[in-house]
Length: 611
Image (cartoon, rainbow, N blue to C red):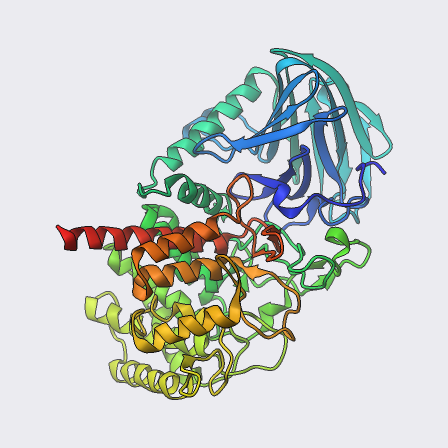
């Protein structure tokens, strides 16, 4: 087998690089096993993480045995991997170059590039390269040509790839190989660019590659310097912020949920979904994180994307949208792909797009309402969108839906969905009182808000069990109930909320710092603890459900489940603490940031009270 193994590495063994338009996953072994080009939701160029035989990969590593250490260059999304062999140490630096605007105006640069720098930093090492792209999920035939000093060209329907390198490239059937012995101080470069609708701009190697790397390092460092959080978890928070920025689709402001598709929630199972889109649900929490860290431009761009996208489908809001705000494609299964460690099916597209999820209305309004907190404005066009959402919630809040967890069963009346409908009306009233939202039907909004509150307090509360419940009139809890204090529906230290937290820990606890999202094995059997829910529990304590010490301790427990680069997936395997699900997951990192911010606010408040 060309890949060398029929099993992909552990999900947490991957790092990520990107250019705010697409992203690549690279394993500890130096294998680029996932890249969709030119956008996050485009067909894959490399997909060995889903099928080591058909998916395609690009590996650079030493011959023979080695151990690995790796890190991000501080304050950047540039990945450094050191391979330690018996004869020497090889360093691989991976990035997708990004440039400041002034440089792009005065220099011709590739529109899409993956740049890989190889350097021997001690002794001597024999390095091996294998380049085996398989465009369009491995379904597209390609035509290969060695073009001498210009490298290797791979043509396929709709585009072409160019690989250039100062390694001696040898073209074989449907792949390229190269080998060389590097000694201390030796450097080699590899550049892959993509051509879609016109000639490709090839990046010269050597000094030009060093300039591209230098530009990228400076670009990320300058962005990182804007982070206003300076608490005890700065490095961890900044890594999460850098991940969010990397997953932002810069041309529109959208932030995708994850760069991957079909990485399983249960190894060998069928809980495999495509997350390369933007969920409205993530909106308010993501905006809170961005504003809280001082990234106002990104927060406003995301809000503008939200409001623009929702205009296209009003009065109903879709659950998710593509990076340009358009409805996504229907879900389909790639039955020829074996899936990550035989976890099938492999899915592209997501049929949750057709679901009714009433909580998204509250998320959009709550995200937009944060403009008021930071002295921003809402223009007349966006004000019409918000008033339209208010009217829609008034008319439909009693409608059963699929809820936050998107089960593919029958719709129900979910407490969290009603909570977010209440939040939509509450935030609209606040915007009206602040003068940012005029012409709002105050009587309609106020009466609807109070009706929703009564419904939750009367039917979302189980008196015999002393807990709020996931479904109105039900008995089970889910982790979304932890968000009730965050949205200011109830105080975190209220008796009802404290007993609900206790019940959630009893029913959903999965180990130190870990929570399942719900306890219905029929909906999602065998899945792991849910990443963001673990952070919600810590944030609930920080909001007043416990002491600052308890909240901080809970937060630290969750932090231990990141991979060695500080990256989290969607879920955590309770048996060994390893990553499950699509990776890296923006939602989990949003939970991390918001919890750190809430901890900092709590600490500051207690210091002021003690002074």
